[in-house]
Length: 241
Image 1 (cartoon, helix red, strand yellow):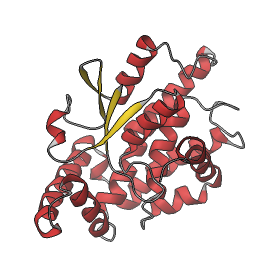
Image 2 (tube, rainbow, N blue to C red; image 1 turned 30 degrees about the vertical axis):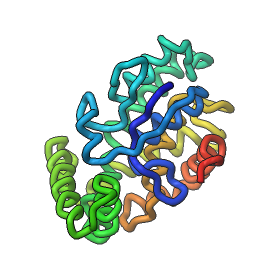
Image 3 (cartoon, rainbow, N blue to C red; image 1 turned 135 degrees about the horizontal axis):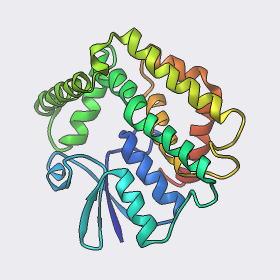
Image 4 (cartoon, rainbow, N blue to C red; image 1 turned 180 degrees about the vertical axis):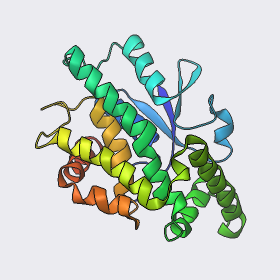
């Protein structure tokens, strides 16, 4: 049995963490059974790379979504991209890298960077990390977590831009994704592949919680991306409460 350490859900969003939702979606697409453990501040200490998601599998703890998926391709003989041509595989990898290494920071800016959104998200972070503590105790720790995320944005470089400039950068990602998806049900055609798990995990986290900001407004205008997220949710998480 696979044990998946992941972030909590919010309303119809199965996980508040994009990479956590990406991995859980992939596991469901691959039809691999797993036990789900919601992380807290204490369980972060178990993370082999100090971040989520991570899994326990055959007595080993493993982190990083890409490396976990590659491991399962070897151990379980599962390749959701088996039908793709080499060019399609390269295209899929390039889009996945764009989403994970660039588009992701638009979500960080929306949740942690914008003052109008942070109070609500601070409460979600506080409850997730310290579920048994009162908010007056846990929210100061959430504030420290925010400082860490803002510092990571600065180190990455995207945090050195204004919100308007960040929105412009992320909008280009959404435009490329929307243009490539076009009117297809899934990014690579009629069947969902790894790229769909990645896109869903990250784009769905722009849609919920529904926060203010130009970045959210931009993705909401891309109806095919919104429809894709709803399609993936219905296909792979319709049995979730």
